Image 1 (cartoon, rainbow, N blue to C red):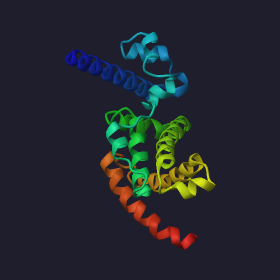
Image 2 (cartoon, rainbow, N blue to C red; image 1 turned 90 degrees about the vertical axis):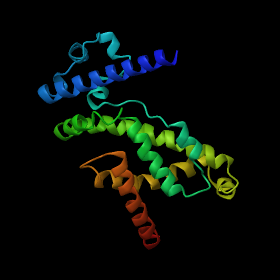
Image 3 (tube, helix red, strand yellow; image 1 turned 180 degrees about the vertical axis):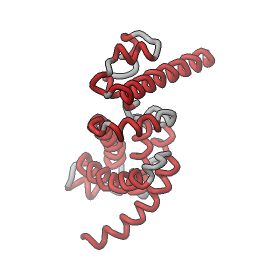
Image 4 (tube, one colour; image 1 turned 120 degrees about the horizontal axis):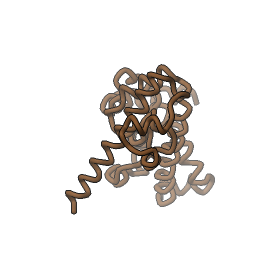
Length: 207
């Protein structure tokens, strides 16, 4: 049974990658406005109906985007009573990567976005989903935390978590810009350590 599931997972991954690669390459050849889901499906050797089992729109296929998710190991390790700046900023980076469907399509994705910057708006929509997912995790932790009880008496847990995620998002974006030449998870985490240290130095000076 596990071998069957593994085979299905591998087949699904291969089909997802084929659709993304076809969509990205057709976009680079013809521009996004001239690309259709039918052409993408034909290039990937799947039916047009199958396309929508993997992507909601052609833009998602072009950029290789999928709904954000968080690994159970990250959820188990998350501690709202510990250093939230480091934890939340790293969690944001992790969840952003979950929307991009693996590293194989990174070079195509980068080339498409550089040539057709109008597609960044679609990526931004997915980043909002990332923020919401991380906010939900932080909110749940704050609601159950004795450490945050006093603050939670004056502010809603949802508002507290929104502020935390926005603050942690600043070094996350800084790190992604610094590692844009090679946007691997390791490079981004390395840049994130520097960004968080810089934020800690800057914050006292702007209060």
